[in-house]
Amino acid sequence: MVNKQLILFYLINGFGGLCVLGSYAHGLITNPSIRCGLWGAVPDSLRPYYTIFMFLAAGGYFFFTGYILIHVSADSVKLFGRYRFWAINILYAGIIIPSAIWIYLTFAMIENPTPLLWIIIRLVLFTVGFSSVALLASFLTSNFDRSSWLYFASIISLIFFCIQTMLLDALIWPYYYPK
Image (tube, rainbow, N blue to C red; front, side, top):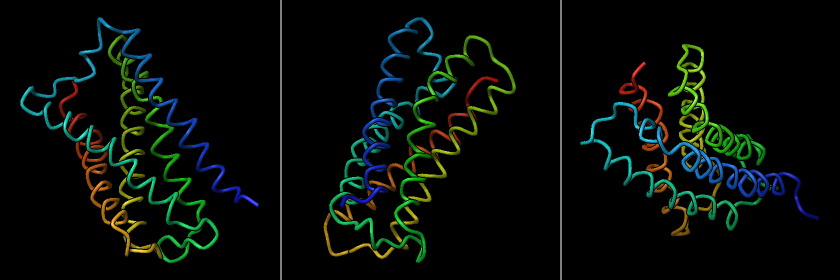
């Protein structure tokens, strides 16, 4: 019998991943005249770092997700010494769901900025960043098998992912965004 939490993990990643990619593609295709506004006022000198870490974070996602699929038992996992597999699903949902709506919120902010919309965007970005940092912490404090090269690749990947989602997206981008 397949574990229900594992099925949910597949749904979050499969359907949710398609929603993230679809929202970005749709948002960029349907808003060509304002898509450069997504950068806000991030200086040109910082933009290459965003590009590099976007690719490292996106590629790294496959390492740590692959590790979970290959090496983590949904029936015996212990995150932070006590939480079961449902906690992994919560953290992934905290990454995927807000990521799927960020671009639409930001385009709305470009077209019709409001303080409430800015607060929502900040909450969305912090949710993703916090979930990413918590996922890294859960890897470090779990009962995961650390003998696989994939575990170490996952840790490195999660560090890149946290740099992108918490540092660059949740902290630096809003600092430069015109309010």
